[in-house]
Length: 141
Image 1 (cartoon, helix red, strand yellow):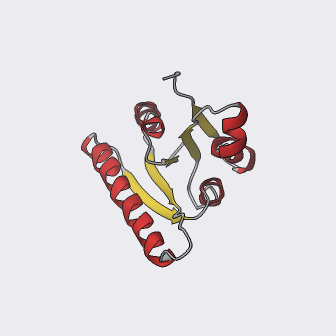
Image 2 (cartoon, helix red, strand yellow):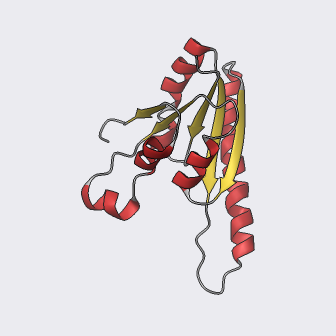
């Protein structure tokens, strides 16, 4: 049913807590795992914006390579992609890529002021992605 599952990761332990559930889902559906990391560099005036962007993308690629290698060692078919921009926008845009069948992602579970300040990437993806979205909310830490 789900031949290719998109898994957005932000580099946090909370985001990676989706991986055991993803492994079960990918095994059940014999799915290819498509990892996505969205990079964005915040710079101060006077800093080299291009250098910061390149570094952010490089760090995202290195991070995904480690996750990809771990999944491949377990026998999963995995590919990874890095996009530059705002998290929710890039994830929703990637949902329109050919052959992506579902999205599996975490939610930080922010509420109140934290949600207002930080926004909810998961909520934006659920509202705007045309695919089924499986959300995982980690237990309180």
